[in-house]
Image (tube, rainbow, N blue to C red; front, side, top):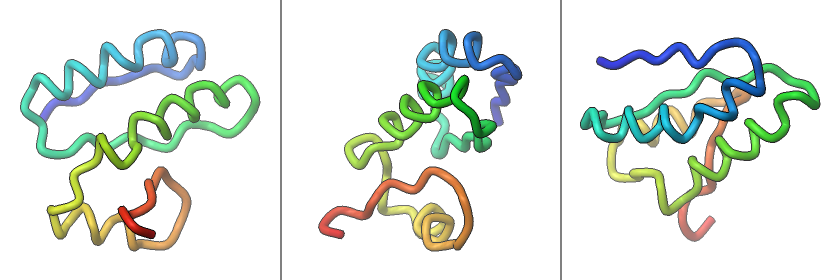
Length: 84
């Protein structure tokens, strides 16, 4: 397991987001989980980047555990299923 502390400041988090995602991707991670970022205008750009990174072409749908997480109610980043 690889853990990255992305920090608490929106500007730093946003600046390092794609570097951190590439690091996790290169680690061979089967899944990349991201804690929900705080609400507020300072985090809007970060939230948008995370939604884009979690878009359908970047998400694996074949894993039943991931599919179950997407069906779970509550806040979070859940891209739409293909064809939905």
